[in-house]
Image (cartoon, rainbow, N blue to C red; front, side, top):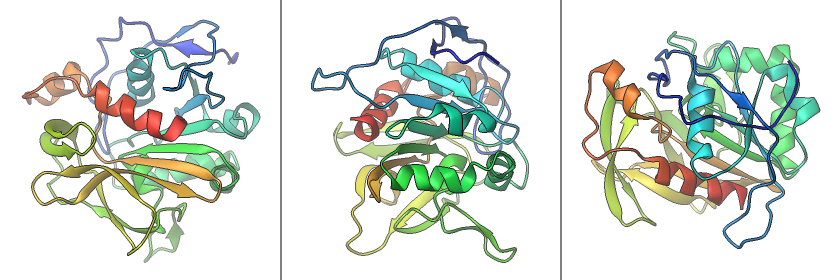
Length: 266
């Protein structure tokens, strides 16, 4: 596949729900050359965004993330695992979203990366100054163990514990609280994680589950790099709720997603 910077065209309304364990229909991308995006300071940011699309990533999830980024003119490129090492620059961001609906979840995504010899590369990339954003399964990947009983390790970059936030397996809109926006929002959630940092860890909390204050989204350093982890799917559009037959009480959450990405990229 020829490599080209792309924005997703606005006509991706056909995207359906994609989450940790929920399938979605495919979206389409339009490949066009793009200029670097600007940071909040107005300077041209050097970090580019590469969104992983692989067997383990839920169908349409990479496109949904790029569609959200498009709304703020942040250029992104959807790539397969085998393209990561040859495409991603030292300060660029790698993004991994939700997984396909099977019991293996993030283990399947790790296998995709391992086949491309990109799993350890990804950890090294972040440590040496790269950026990473993990959404749902992509956030689970930051934990020490994917399955400790089976000896399956994660990236082991989150300074603490990553664990399932037990709200059941069904897709739902969950009330979350966002500190910088100073308000509560209903966000799309399906079997996502919660984050429990070690005491004194340098974790910047972006959002919490309103029910009990457990961390739902955060940014933290790893070596010279920066990592963002998001449990809810802030890239979800109306089609996700329509397919799951659930109603979003307060509309799109793209602004929260963009704010989280900016914290990692700037």
